[in-house]
Length: 332
Image (tube, rainbow, N blue to C red; front, side):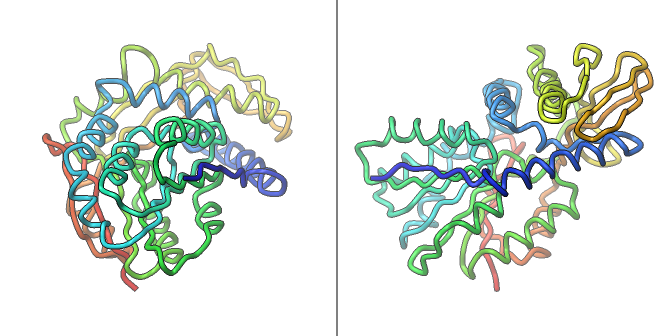
């Protein structure tokens, strides 16, 4: 057994990441309407808040995926049990859902290495500690990487004796617009080998009231999560954003087929960001879009797989058909 992690987000990589953060903020707040990508929120604290969101009973993407893993863990095991493999998880978070699979794989005596990748070093440290505590008596090898997705994939040692199985769970693909999702999946395809598998979580289109409830919890965690982005900008870029002058609201947009979250400025105000050397002006109730969660149809999922170079192997649904983990095979 072996439990280790490596931080790739240091030195030149850390500087590049900081530059990307600054440029994303500059571009997003200069746009009309203003828009900030959700990946900016996922520092260590942002990851912790999102873990709390996943525990909400009304947040169906997480609850449905837990159900899928419990219900279909043997189906997944049967797909993978013929040979040793690397289980690579992009955006591993706290790894709770994946532990359902890990435990079943170990009980089924599968030979594999688990490689969780996350941009949050804190998340990777926590998942390594949790796995070591839970599975220290088993022959499990874990190599955690604090890294951007593709930097992490590039750092994994190539072993022709091990097939790659990539997990991209939690409807993270929905944070991308369709052309961006296809571009991402093509880049992923280029880094994998013929016959490798990917399993991707897709939140399916459903009643708009269900979608609204999922992203507007009465506990205020989604607002806390989105407002944390403003705290990060203050800390990283020397901004003077008064977070108490913003409120959050999520809504389903029938034109974009996505749930979109916005931070609204409750008054007319000016924000200074020292690291950018700029001021940004807000009218009263002017929004900043901070999240975009696209809801897929089954037809779109099948087309996305084909257009990105994959064969669809299996669709794994929850009981209500709210969510699907789609298993694809790399075709080259």
